[in-house]
Image 1 (cartoon, rainbow, N blue to C red):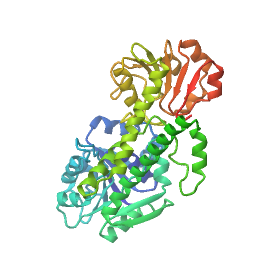
Image 2 (cartoon, rainbow, N blue to C red):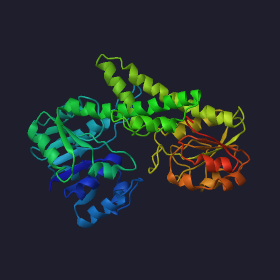
Image 3 (cartoon, helix red, strand yellow):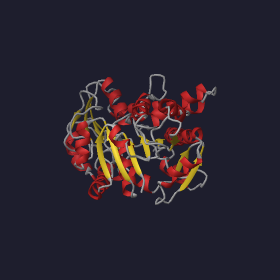
Length: 426
């Protein structure tokens, strides 16, 4: 058992703390938000994440997971401190390290002798050196241990990872961090800090590239009369390609891909390389938002002015309540700008909240969102939507077109109910 301090209880910090406690370590999680800490102490989880509430409750019950206000209380007896604070995107696309530097400055004089500090936040290449300079503690080693957590399956990703990456110039510190994952069956990759930090950005940029590629192929399929679903199956059986991240959709978003892709562009430019391929990936994604909006416009009769659009799904993906850089929100903003009225439903959004554009009517259920609508569009891949009755929807709305931005609905059933079903790449 190792004594760990987790600085920051956001998505990454809370998942990291709860999972390490589950693995048997003694974990103290710190945050500056007193009300949030009080809720966490009661086992109340502020985000939607599968199994996370179970692990927090388990850690509180066993007594090896606790929550405190401020980093000072968390690090005073720790062996390893994890920095899990935000790294928001700056105006030029670079990652803002101010939260990381502030946290490092706060704990610098409080860390026990020969403690280890771990960068868990997604940070630019060279950030371990930045933290070392801020700490000004020759006895404290700084390690990079990037996270590869997918929202909606973060707990399983942590406990059953494809790999664990540890970057440090001090081998003993790298081994100490790697040993925290002893109960996890995964390859431990020990490398230098710059390589560890680059792995994180490269992985996310590659996944974004696959998504933009398949959306571009979907556009080609529509032009030549092919079915992208069959194309994906044919591609996916090729072991060199694989089927993961080859599902066409309304575009990609979330808290990581947009921010990390632009940050890698910035890193490449500063390193003297013009990363045109990645710039194209981002451009294709922006164009996808426009393409789906155009599909809805055509479905509405050529103009969105005065039309009512029912939207199923607001979050950037299913199994989360995260609206950050959601493709659905990007498309809704375009619909509103074109004069449409938007009625939306999402299983995790029960009222207007930060991130939902002003003027959007958030409905109590999916059927309510379709009342008097001219067009229905599906923008988040919630499984709940698969089983809704198209006949009930037909009774609600005068329009007879559904733009299925996730290829989620059963086309035959909707066509049988009198709808024209328009998918992506079909």
